[in-house]
Length: 112
Length: 115
Image (cartoon, rainbow over all chains, first blue to last red; front, side, top):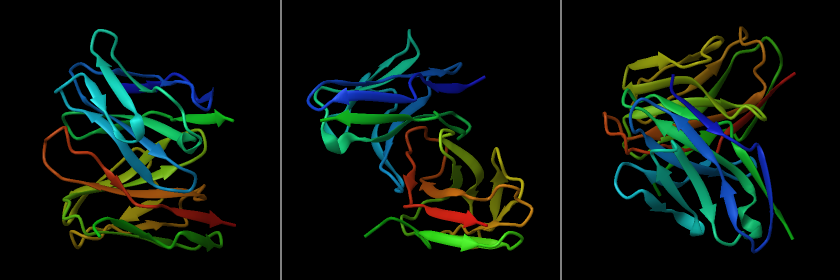
């Protein structure tokens, strides 16, 4: 069965330190993968997407993610956290039949 | 400006009343979606529509109904049969077709409180 697992429900980092948000997926073929960000009481905004081109994908606000087929992972990283990065992040898988699967989300806290 | 609008931002209703949430897009997208968001549960799909006059149930359709009479509009009705309607509701749209690369665009959401 296809699924998306975000391994941490909460992540806390200090401002200026690296961010790592982990996402693993399960699929019988290479899907499209997306990361979205949601600030409190707002809709979701696309950060980046992987669609079988380059495995290292750069997104907005300095975020990037690497698709690793052997590990079925699509972890989101940023070299240096900013206070404005505090939000909830969702890893999303899109399958061939247009089915879209959301991870349960990771809330990122930035410590001053 | 192109985008998705949802109205109202906050909605309050008494138990037993039906309520309709509005979703409009001017992105010329074929596909539209309704999600429900509860704390700690991520997003759960209620209904989606890939084309006008057609829609499919998602994972949690019970107690909800939709219509898709126009490409731009996909209203969601929360009926009195929905046992726990208080939640944050998000509407999204995307280009249709089989391409995997099409991402979703989300509206700002409607927070519904039923007492």
